[in-house]
Amino acid sequence: MNKKRLHIFLVDDDADDRMLFEEAMNEVDPQAKLSLADGCDMLIQLAKIENDKPDMILLDLNMPGLNGFECLDEIKNKEPFGNIPVIIYSTTANPEQVKKTYNKGATLYMQKPSSYEGIKKLMNKIIADDLFDSKAMEKNLVISV
Image (cartoon, rainbow, N blue to C red; front, side, top):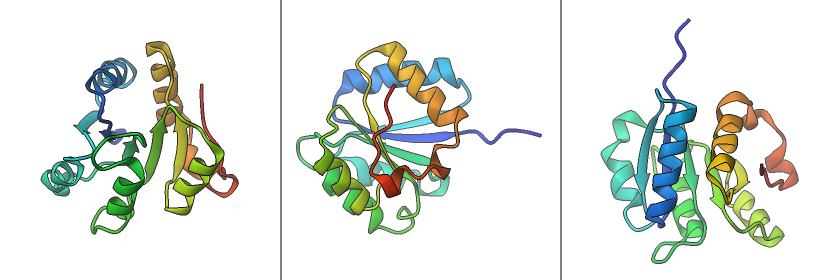
């Protein structure tokens, strides 16, 4: 049986973070497709790939211009993207922010690792584990490595 090619859309304003994520993703799952955007061009980039919708969106919270909360609102209120799982991918794990993102429709909240190896471990969790069947959303959990 052929495994479906994973398509991840990463929204992060930090070019270095996007580059590290891309390199880690290429090591963990070389077949995966990765689309990249910062908060300001997120909707434009999503519109460009509308016919090849991502399997999930990883969304940083702390971005200038359109922040992660605003991006989350835009994604959840825009067809046909509202049903795509959104994983918050942020360095902060303030309980109030975590709860706010889940209340706005985030699927999971993952704390951004501080190392390249941490990013790879997190990607393995996303790919190997069935995180979307967890009860993280109900419990306002933060997934970390």
